[in-house]
Length: 301
Ligand SMILES: NC(=O)c1ccc[n+]([C@@H]2O[C@H](COP(=O)([O-])OP(=O)(O)OC[C@H]3O[C@@H](n4cnc5c(N)ncnc54)[C@H](OP(=O)(O)O)[C@@H]3O)[C@@H](O)[C@H]2O)c1
Image 1: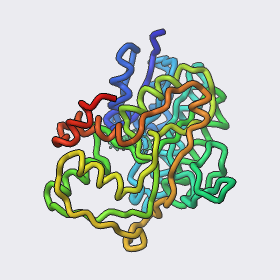
Image 2: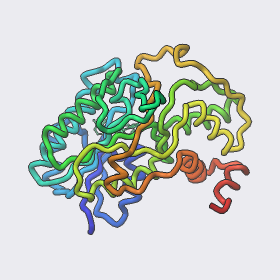
Image 3: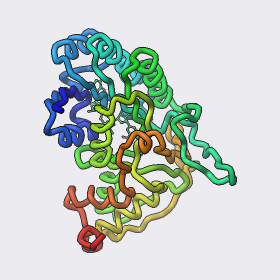
Image 4: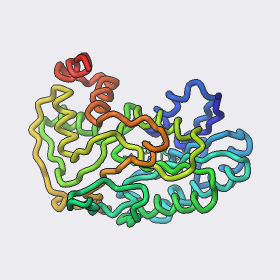
C-alpha cells in the first residue's frame, strides 16, 4: 500500500532517515521553516491540504538544557504542537505517529524480582525530572486524550548520519584533542535512526494504537558508547570516565534510561539489532570506520 505520509521536523536526524526508508510512499517532509508545529493555524492548514494517511511528528525542541530556561517554548513545541496535530488528525481521519523519549522516566532503575535493574516498560509510571521531560509527557498525554488512532514511540540516545549527536561530537573531539572525559554512570539504550526509521514505518501502518518503546538491543553507558566509537574509528583517544555529579548542567539527566520493547515485539516489529551493530553501520555511513571497524563489517555473521 502506498502511504501518504507527512513528516514534521524534516531536517532533524530522525526525519532524514525516515524519509529515506519511506521512498515507496508519497512523502511530504516539512522542515521547521516550512511548518512550525506550535502554530495551530498552520498545522491545521497543512494537514487539511495534504490529507495524509499518517502524520509522523519528529519535530521537537530537543535542547534539553535550553528547555530548562524556557519552559513556555518547550511546552509550545513539545506539548501543544502534538496536540494541534492530534486534533487535526482526528478531523481528517489520519494516524499520528508521535515521538517521545526516555526522559519521561525519573532515571532511577526499576528492579526485577531478583533485585536487579530492569528496563523501563511502556506501562511504568512516568516521572520526568526536567522541563524537557515534562513537556514530552504533556505531549504524550494530549495525543492520547485527543486521538484514539495514535502511535506514541518512546526512544532514546539517538544518533544518525544527518544530525548532531553524541557520536558525531565524540568523533570530532577525539580527533581534535586526542583526549575526552565522558560520564560512565548514566546507562541507556543507544539507538540509531537508520534502525528506528523502518520500525516507525511498520508501526505507522500496523493499525495498533498505543505506546511503544523502540530502541536498539543492548545497553551502554555514555563512556561505553564513546569507547566503542573510538575503537571502531581506529582513533587513539585518552578516554577518562567521569561521574555525573561533576557536571554542572541545568537539566538533570536520567541515570537509567534502558527501555524494554515488549509492546513493539508483540506488535510484530522486527527487533532492532544490537547498538554496536548500529554504531558500526553509522560509522560506515559517515566514512569513519578504521581498520578494525572495516573488518567488523566484513566478518561473516
Ligand atoms: N535526540 C535524541 O537523543 C532523542 C532521544 C529520545 C527521543 N527523541 C525524540 O525523537 C524525535 C526526533 O529527535 P531528533 O534527534 O531527530 O531531533 P532533532 O535532530 O533535534 O530534530 C528535531 C527537528 O525539529 C525541528 N523543530 C524544532 N522546533 C520545531 C517547531 N516548532 N516546529 C517544527 N519543527 C521544529 C528542529 O528544527 P530546528 O533545528 O530548526 O529547530 C529539528 O529539525 C523528537 O521527538 C525527540 O524528542 C530524541
